Amino acid sequence: MPFAPRHWFALVLLAPLLLQAAPAPWYYWRSLVDGQRACAQTSPGPGWERDSAPHEGPGCQPRRKVLVVPMR
Image (cartoon, rainbow, N blue to C red; front, side, top):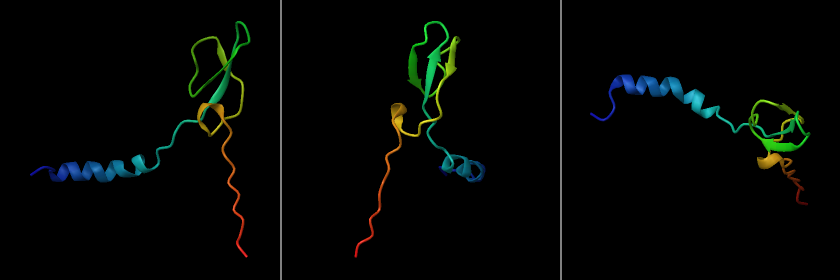
């Protein structure tokens, strides 16, 4: 028997968490030492502060806008 009933129970409990997973947003971070900026999902380390609003595209790129033009 590959899956015991307790395995199915655990899978049912974890399924909603897996379905809600999303990539982390990207931010610009500014160095408190020399003012340089870096783009990363998490802080590069001590001495850095967040310097922008979250970007949803990878690498601090703006999200692509999709225009839907109705057909006549």
